[in-house]
Length: 104
Image 1 (cartoon, rainbow, N blue to C red):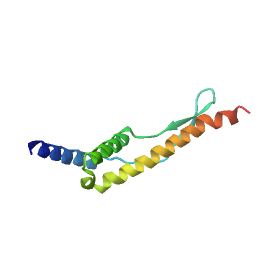
Image 2: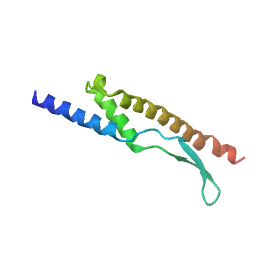
Image 3: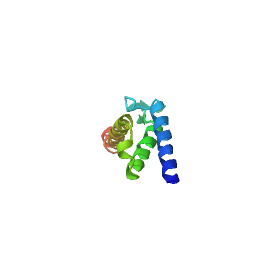
Image 4: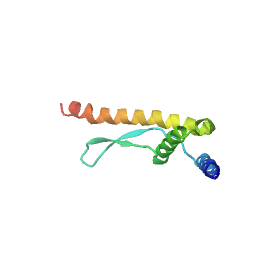
């Protein structure tokens, strides 16, 4: 019983701290910039705190706290997941598709 109360109080503290933070997915997700030699590369803009919250939510759902998680945090997690997939796809495109076309 004591462990359960401690776990629930830690969850409440975590949720309050996440809600008070100004976490959001910022756009644009990436920039194409050129280095000093003129070579283009992708500079990805992604907040590490958002990724950490997404992982924490996934673990809390696994522990059974899913229905108690605030909807704002769940919506942030969905945005982070979509933005992360978009960033990875764009980076893979720039790494594998563009260099072959630029060399022609």
